[in-house]
Amino acid sequence: MQSKVRFEIVSGLYCDFLNCLVENGFYISSVENTAFGIKAVCLAADYGTVARMAKKFQCRTKILGRKGIYFKIRKILKRRGLVLGAVLVFVYLFVFSHMIWRIDVISPSENITQDVYSMLYAGDIYAGSLFSQQKNSRMIQHIFMEVENVGYVTMNFSKGILTCKIDPAINRLPYLQHSTSGNIVATESGVIEDLRVYKGFSQVQAGQSVYKGDVLVSATYIDRNGTLQQVMPRAYIKAACRREYTAQIDFEKDVWIRTGQTQQQTVVKFMGKSVEIIQPDTENWQRYDTEKTFESASFMGFCLPFTIEKTRFYNKELMHITRDQATAYAAGVKAVEAMIKADNALIDISEKCFSYTADADGATVSCTVYGHYDITRY
Image (cartoon, rainbow, N blue to C red):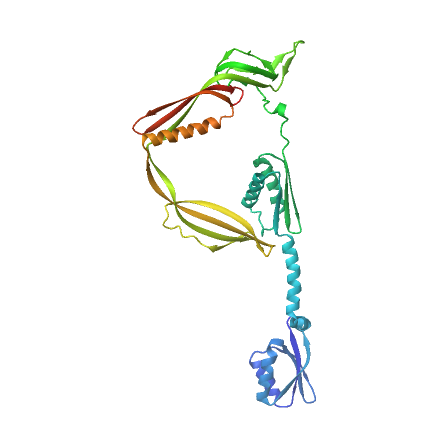
């Protein structure tokens, strides 16, 4: 509905003035005669021009009434700062009640906490993003499937705070830790010295020689009633074995090594938008490593709905490394020792014998270990 003004033209050459307005295309309606002039209606936007043109015809104009939405809300518009503030308050209440200001992860270990924070960030759930119930449900399932030692996951959102609580998985009782769903087979050849079958049907006995792959404990057996029984076997079988560990070391090779030159990229993320604050210059770098970290923004201890992502770039250059036989042998011994230490089946060592062979390309370091192994474990 257009805003209009009803006005009166008094004295002067009001007839010529009215004709001039019509000839110039002004909207004029509801023309009425009065004792000293005429009354008419024009658009509110044209009234200022009409009042100025009236002076050329010695006429005076007087506003009699105003009609339109603009005139009804004009008093409110005069206080537009107050109105805008009230509107923004409601907008902020709606937006920020659906925005994540802080994420709290409660878990039984620091490793799980860091894994969950990383998964939430990779799923676009961070301080400053809008909360989505659908995304929240998918993330609960993702955390439960991907993170180890997780028994139950809950994620609750209230007053801008997303709380993720991780309950630990209930581990097997000690007497069930090494239970399997099938037959127990030998993982190494040797002579059995200690045989303890807790569940299942033993196929071997102490003092017997076994080969790798032989069935040690069967998961099925026939009871006294002739019924086939199936269980989850569990056993501890210690055997004297000989196992060989080998490491190959090259005399010469090309490797990419960090030079110490770094660049950093800083990005601010808010409501799904990313704003790059610092841009790295890696145009002339052939290869580089990246390390990405992120943290929620805060000011004087007050959390802000922004997440700052920092990516550090490490320049790498191709370098040629040369080793002599002594250096290669020392590196091989160190690698073999690490392999032996990481062997979960090894119980104790009786003797270790190192051997060394070399050719034009590199050296091979081998270690033969005589000792006792739990041949039910890998």
